[in-house]
Image (cartoon, rainbow, N blue to C red; front, side):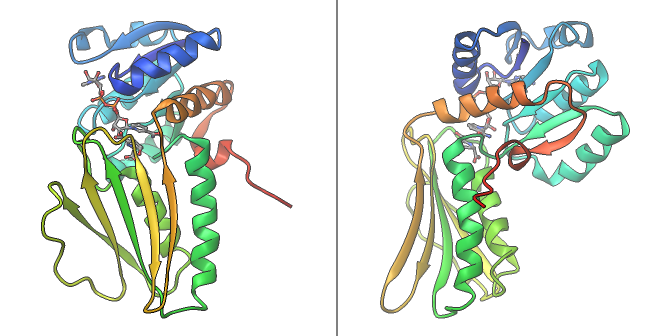
Length: 250
Ligand SMILES: NC(=O)C1=CN([C@@H]2O[C@H](COP(=O)(O)OP(=O)(O)OC[C@H]3O[C@@H](n4cnc5c(N)ncnc54)[C@H](O)[C@@H]3O)[C@@H](O)[C@H]2O)C=CC1
Ligand SMILES: O=C(O)C1=N[C@H](C(=O)O)C[C@H](O)C1
């Protein structure tokens, strides 16, 4: 497969290595130094584009891929307010797009279990739930896309929560004002070079349940993105990671 890498930072470089190991070819690499090379002509040389750039760049990059009719895999977070608009454009133009807030197998298993746990916790209303995410200090967006997906999984399944609110404690400073009982708190911390840690906490007066995923490095995210690029070949439509992973245990 011929791959265009849109974004060649921490993730782009690991994706390149994994793609080469899996016998793919990198035909285009874009970062902030060569944006003039991101043209429809250059994109059409690729079978697929893998996009890990910045929240400010991603929408333009998606539209360039739509114009070039190149399937696109999106790892970039911080743009989900535009998701419905991009979905409509993807379908209208008969393109192929797969996005995921987190491409690692472990986190996608976590997403699945998080929904089951939230449904179960309806029976035990004396537990208060919150989500905590920890990432490296270079991260541009908060809350993390992964934390948003976790929060949506809880809100969809736990009757007491209808919306999430976010607090970013960059320096471990003061927490938060009052959180309403229908609101799910997502606490974001930025510490050193942490690749990504997410915890769902159910706390009561007598005990605490902590459900946690810790990324040891970025390789799991990168492998998932390459698997998605392989998966989307010959498909049209708007997809997310759950279309690719199958966690049906029956
Ligand atoms: N979905 C997932 O599994 C994961 C998602 N991410 C997300 O991926 C994104 C990138 O993460 P990192 O690689 O850690 O960031 P990074 O800051 O190391 O790399 C970003 C890259 O984008 C480039 N860039 C800037 N403007 C661009 C443009 N207009 N077009 C193309 N490239 C451009 C920069 O030069 C840089 O090479 C972030 O939004 C992050 O949250 C990160 C890890 C996993
Ligand atoms: O910026 C990161 O590094 C990561 N971003 C994604 C997110 O926002 O959830 C995925 C992963 O946690 C790493």
